Image (cartoon, rainbow, N blue to C red; front, side, top):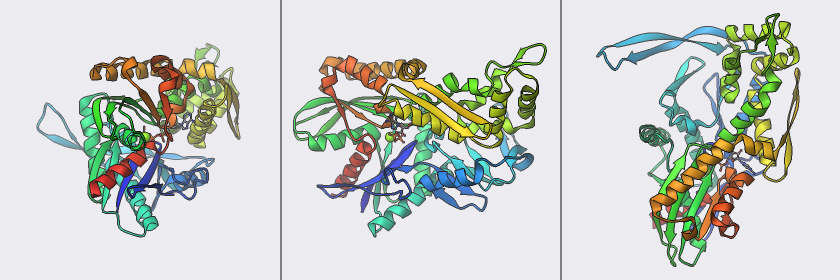
Length: 448
Ligand SMILES: Nc1ncnc2c1ncn2[C@@H]1O[C@H](COP(=O)(O)OP(=O)(O)OP(=O)(O)O)[C@@H](O)[C@H]1O
Ligand SMILES: [Mg+2]
C-alpha cells in the first residue's frame, strides 16, 4: 500500500487514497482533539526507548517538569574536529552540563534542525544521536503505527518537503540530503518527495473543474511555502514558480515570548546599590524552550540568585529561577501558543502560567500580537511578491489563493492576502490535512 506522509515541524500525518476517497489515519489515539494529527515530538528515555506524539510530551511533562534539575559538568564523548586550513584533525574531549536524574529528553521541531549545519548530533544520556537518527526514530515509529492500522505492509511513501528548508541554498541542499538519509535510516520503502504546496494543490485540483491560476499559501510551524501554478480544466497542474521562507508558527511564538513575557522573568530589574541592569544576554536564552535549560549552568544561576537577593524585582527573578530549575520552558511556550491560537478567533487572549513561584496572566490583545510579528509579515509579503514576479504575474492574474497550514489562520496574514488579492479569491483548505491528502493522491497515482 502506498501512503502520503507529511512530517511537519509541529504536526505529522499520514493519508491513503484509493482513487475516490482520502483516509487520514488516526496516528495518535492520545490526541483526543484530533487523533489524525500526531505531534512531531520525540521522547527518548535514559534506556534509549523512543516515544512519539502526545505520549512523548506527556512523558516529558510527567517526568521532567516540576522537578528540580541538577546539572553536572560531565564528559560526554569525543569529537573529531577538522580545520579547513590544515589537513590534520584533532580529537577533542567533549564536556557538557547534563541533567543527571532526568528520565528522558524531549525533541520538538526536529525538521527545523535539518537546515542547521551546527546541529550534527546530540548526546542523550551518554549516547550520541545524529539529527538524522532522531528523525529516523520518529519516522520508523510512524511507519509501524501506519502498518498496524492498515493491517498491511507499506510499499511506497510520498513524503512532503518544504520548497525551501532554508534561505541559503547550501543549507537547503544539506537539509534535503539529511531528510533523505533519515528516511533511509528509518527504512521507509520506496520514498519519493513532493513539495508540500504542490501536494496541497493536487488535493484542490481533484475537486476543481475549471482552468485557473492558483497561489498556494502553506504556512505551518516551521516554514512558509508558496507555489504559483496553473491548473487546467482536467485538473492537470503546471508549476509556474515556487518560493518560501523559514518563518512559521514557531517564530510567531518566539516573538510573543521575547516581546511580552521577559518582563515576568526579570527584564528591566536593577541589581544592587549601583543599580546595574539585569543582563539581557541571560534572557536571550528564553528565545526557544530548548535553550532555557542552558541557564542551569552555575554562572547563570549565580546571576539569577544574585538578582533574587539584591534586585528591585525579586519575584520576577524567582519566577526565572523556577522556569529554569524546574523546567517550565515547554509549559511557557505551550501557554503562549494557546494564546496565539485563541487570537485567531478573538480580539484578546491571556497567557496564563501558574506553578509555584509563577503566577502569570499576561493579556495579549490581537493588535499587540500583530505589532510583534510586523517583521514576519513583511518577510511573508516580500516572499509573495518574489513568487509572483518569478511567475511573471500580477496579483490580479491570480484566480484563487489556497490557504493551508495552521499559521495560515492568523488573521493578520489573512488580511495581507485579502488586501493583495481580494477576499473573494481566498479559499481555506483544511489547514492540517490539505498537504497530506495531496501526498496520498500522489502516492496513489504513482502506484497506478
Ligand atoms: N488557529 C490557529 N491560529 C494560528 N496558528 C495556529 C492555529 N492552529 C495552529 N496554529 C499554528 O500552526 C502551526 C502548526 O501548523 P501545521 O501543522 O500546519 O505545521 P507543520 O506542517 O507541522 O509545519 P511545516 O509545514 O512548517 O513543517 C503551529 O505553529 C501552531 O501553533
Ligand atoms: Mg506543513
